[in-house]
Image (tube, rainbow, N blue to C red; front, side):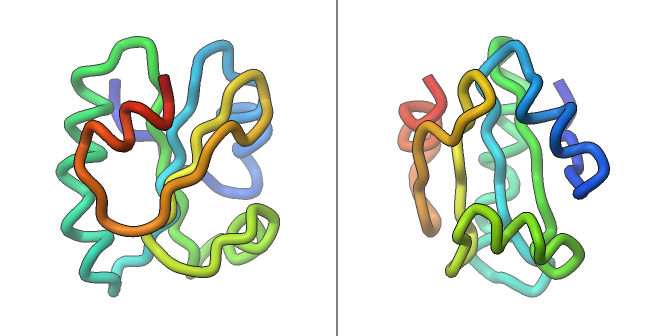
Length: 102
């Protein structure tokens, strides 16, 4: 499945109303560790059929970053049944993100 780009406009539908776990990557284009994690995020999206993977550019969607207390990037938040179920900050191994969302 392709990575879904989130905005204030589609966040509710794509994340809060999702019928499967959602992994959200809060990132910025200028962030080195975010760029390093991007291929890992893409891999998870391609390999994990039961997980929806989304990205939020914090420079474009500051309101969403503030809403979820994102202070450092990259920050990954797993959502299950419309609620934040786990958070991981920084560049981490792929299995740490999978553990977060499963």
